Image (cartoon, rainbow, N blue to C red):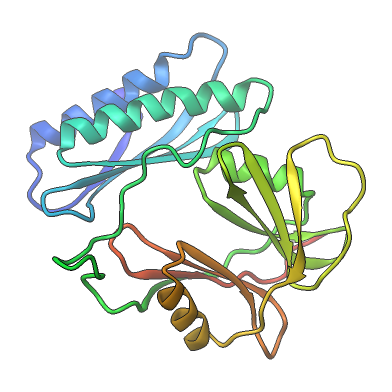
Length: 249
């Protein structure tokens, strides 16, 4: 399977290191057993927060379902160990009955200076504009787990408004919408409901609020359109913005 794994890496890695990454990920993908089709394996290796650190990310399709795992460590070998273990676990999770994913696990911290402050001024360096999926909060939570996200933006058909699910506590999930609304009926998953609508903020105001409160992410709504937005911290300490557009019910 190694030849079916594509690797994109930061400058300076040797051919031997790239080959090792390809082989390790291929072995991890083949480990779960016969009957699980794992394909479209893509590995990204990037410099992580701390000097000399490595972030390893793997995207794949498991029986047609997209998954993602990412792990950071001080060196390439440890990062590949972690991401390979995570990949095996994620494949098992998405091919079995869904259960709440342990959280937060081991996450790489944002880069800090000698006094604990961020190395860079907070600014948005990446914009994503996906077509938001109309789905139940439970389906959104499953997608969030499969893709290794801490927050997932979608459109809630119960209210026809943008919403997010995100992790709270070791086994909990929370639903928040752009407007206050009551529960959408009986649920079988551990999702609690935020009673508040998302704050209406400009992008600049959202950046200031996230930075001032040292939040890992912030769900807010555009003051003009009312559409949901997610501002989040990247592994390099800078910010990303998800500003989805209308999908199809």
